[in-house]
Length: 96
Image (cartoon, rainbow, N blue to C red; front, top):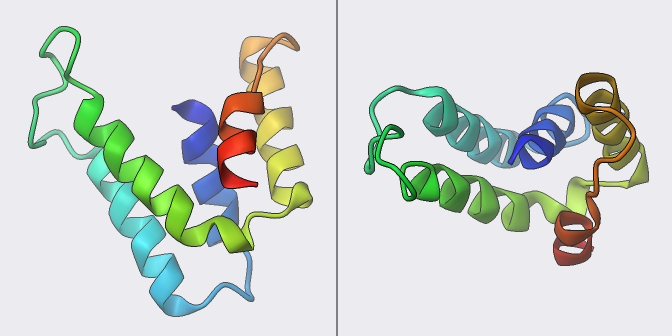
């Protein structure tokens, strides 16, 4: 989930990304951080399902703007936070 958030965050910073796409990203990231959710985050096992869904939908809608530079920035940030053994291949395979 953190990798998806970072991909959206770095895509948001690209100047060539259209305003409509940036609005989609802001909406998804906003929903992720808001304490009021469709499914409360403290619900064990399903609390983050709606957050993950919102992030996934946003990722698919903005995937055309996610290039290798953005992926690399996100991977570097993940490595600095969690170490070098982070596997991003699942998300990368889904967004191309």
